[in-house]
Length: 354
Image 1: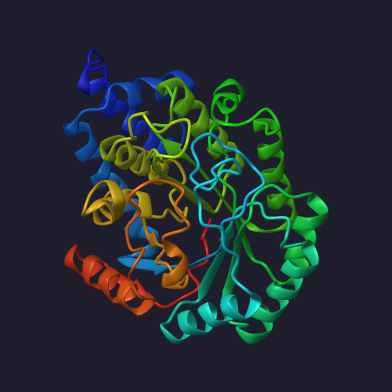
Image 2: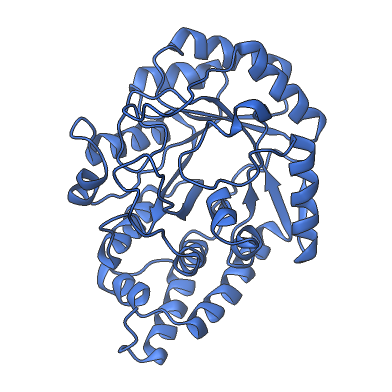
């Protein structure tokens, strides 16, 4: 952190962000580089004001179903990358996925997030059939997909089948930095085009990035903020980079709780109505990480509805929490945690106001 910029100037930048909901590239860089604990507390107080102005003390839950850990990609940071031969691979059957939905519905979940690697076994036809079935059985629920880069036609077909939302982290919008984290077969340009396609089709779109990924700079983060402001997504998911022992980045340092929280606060001021998760990765690097995320401006948590038998196999990073909890256990635990800081978990679809 660079603290050579006067604190008064940085407070002025936060006030400007609060008022105008945008900053220039150089202002973003200065603010991110110059952050201090005192500045963070000031930012979080404003972020909570904005969070509660639109959402009160309601925290939305999303039921996460990690249905396949097969992936055709070889991203350098990811534990389920194609070339990791030590992963115990699995695919849930359609009946297993529907069983997760049934259990989640009974627990009060009204959003299901189907997340998986880019697994060619799940063809468009299989996914369309699955989405239609969930839509028919649970008409009052939102269906969120997080299955990577697809063609515009495929995205449209999933939307027509009943999917409402799509999560696709842009990871980093800087083309050079993207190339340092991914194989040559993947590009930042294509990833970003997917997001624009999803938005034009009519999805509620979620994007985001890892905080503290290898080679990341304050300038990269400034570019990410500008990109997200332009995209104006309904959801933004950020979490600290956590290395996985079976990847090329095994020896890289993890991202920090402190910077992740600071960026959550900035995002809340930049897009006040955005849905902002306090991620599992936050809870992994600090025992009260998710609570601190809520107090920095987040308003969504995503407990795991996947069968406990496969949770330990969906490890994108090391030491992931909640791999042994039953879904009901997870839900009760989160309710207690949120109540302890003055918030309440609500049973609702939790659509974006953005």
